Length: 315
Image 1 (cartoon, rainbow, N blue to C red):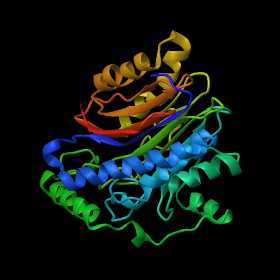
Image 2 (image 1 turned 60 degrees about the vertical axis):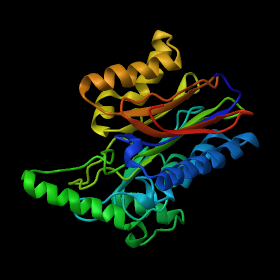
Image 3 (image 1 turned 30 degrees about the vertical axis):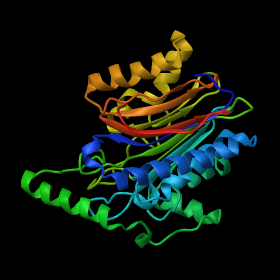
Image 4 (image 1 turned 180 degrees about the vertical axis):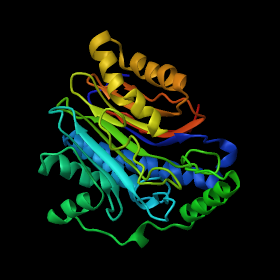
């Protein structure tokens, strides 16, 4: 499925079943996935850069309460929203990330700012927000992230924790929690690859837990020599496997195709450790891969001069 340029997106992978989504909610997800693709593809079609495209696509999902990123971020044990994000430019291998930010409307934009305006790769917490104000990124009140759905998810997790008598941090990929990390990868007309990932983490997480989303090589990677990758799922396993970089490494050092490398990374390596999730990827020829080992993954792609395609279930 080679293409001159294109974009691929994901909105989370997990136990996503037809029986657990109403027709109305499914339609809402498909509409937002289409809108995300449209925002990124329009930039690519006009000759814009891959980095602009992936950030625009992720912004659409960050601004929707449907996904566990930005507006739809889940709550921590203390009742806060702590968000992570990262971006990477495949042309220069420059990258940037933010972790545990609480007042940034679009964390992926701040991650890009870290990449472009600082000598660092990863900033976190209050320091990242101080950096944001230095460059006139507007901070939002905590109330911006509040939704009844997410708050109720936290209350259910807290109640379950009482009965279990142990910490109960809940991945946002269970039958009752059909939302997750968002991401996008793109190939632009100049042949440059880019990746972006954004996440609200885990419901009821403690101690400012940080997952794979802001970690370059785990939740995000892009290299013009190989591919661009964004992952979604149980972050601790993606960090142990360095999944995003692993796809690139298998292509570079073992001369695997994108499809071969992506399938091995998810279906073999991640699954062998007990991890769940998936990834999206595009290579320098415009080939794409979207493997996952869960019942569903919110996903979509649009390649040059072709119609957009979105999917949710394992079809």
